[in-house]
Length: 424
Image (cartoon, rainbow, N blue to C red; front, top):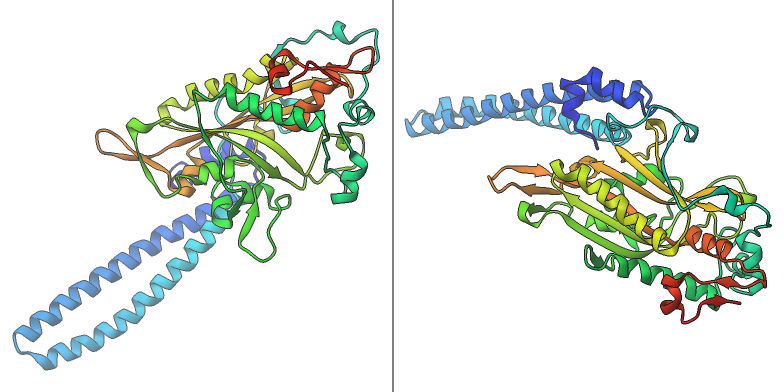
């Protein structure tokens, strides 16, 4: 969540920055009103508590002096003061609950250098790697679902029978290809990131403190009989590892990676954009997460983008790096770069990784802090990104690997994992 002091001490600038994300102006205004009320109530509660302490000391002195009748009269006065304090504290708790509810609906502030804009059309392509439109001219490129179903490695019919639309069944070399992608991604980052196998179910407190319950509250899957959610991304449990902890400055940055299954409802129009592996409810992903000092977050962000690009370069897939405009940023992010792979089978660029600088937005809610060597305690900055989200990368490999004889060529980086260089 954002720092409420910004709403009190720098409201106009904070409201301006939030407007870049398309936030309703009434939301920060309501938050400021409640923050001001809380500040006033805190002062009233503190004053009442001081009066209570002073009264208790006075009663003690009266008793030590043997003035019992005066002490008893003072006790009766203090009983009324106690009731008044209870009322003030109850009012403060109510205001804090209301403020918390409002603040949890306010997204992170966009970074100053994020492009202006409100929609995907306003995003900025920063660079393109390995793509030449002439490479796709003069031949027909089948979509991956046609190629994969013909080869028997994708079984959409039985996936629908088992679970409904937007699920997949991978078979034989299709299953092996997905497993190979995960292994490659983990091996690529083995030296720089600590591998973690987290739970795939998390408590409401954990998912809400990362900002994902607000973002995915209509998309996340909840377990009916427990206070548990299926994770929409590996970022959620990785960010939950250090909630409520104070880390040592010398231990930063912390870099984690996790291979997880993820679940999202992915509500949207049915049709061509949901066919095959383009958009699925359940998917396999290798997530990368960093916790660092505030002054290092920009450098760590660029490093994280480079790390996410590694697998695409190694696999030989054409991709581009896109900076999201302010209005298209995710709820928790102050800056986002998307990596998009070109899909010749559908003639579109498909997002395969989203790298986010979250600043202290998640760590404030989760109270993830670090102690400076000089003794001060501060909030860490957090970053996250997909090291490799398998569905669309899997699809892109099938489409780019199409051979004239109907087989699919396996990228050299995956041959040792697959045990073969051709599927079919």
